[in-house]
Image 1 (cartoon, rainbow, N blue to C red):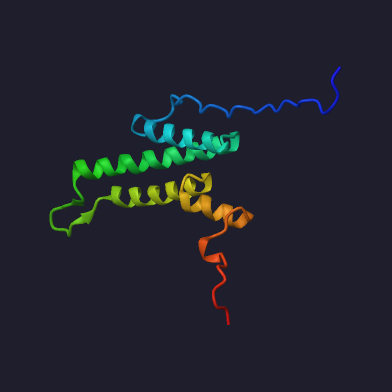
Image 2 (cartoon, rainbow, N blue to C red):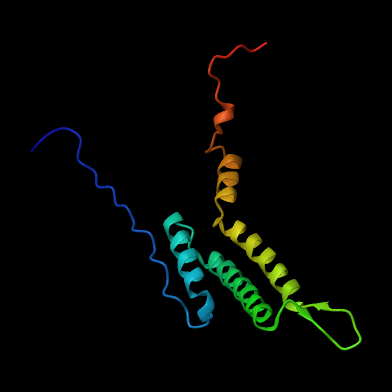
Length: 138
């Protein structure tokens, strides 16, 4: 028998692989779903709660893309006889859907600024401006 400390095994769990793209994801958003799921899996944040947020994020992106395509096909304005030109309603729909998608992407941590803000709030991250280089402080 040998004496001394026994070697210990450290088991590192492999992060969950992102799920395959579900059938409910519209074709126009399959690429967005795959990128977002891959990013969440890499961060170790792919949980049931985040999957619900991811679903809402994908729905918002799909709505924005559909509205933008409708505007591209039909034009930015509607012209009715005897009336002023009216903006296509798809413009407002796309803007609102993009705003919703940005908010959800931020909550999911898919936007770099929101990840940095979360790290600053938790004390993990120190900005370069906070470093003291021994300058002349008065």
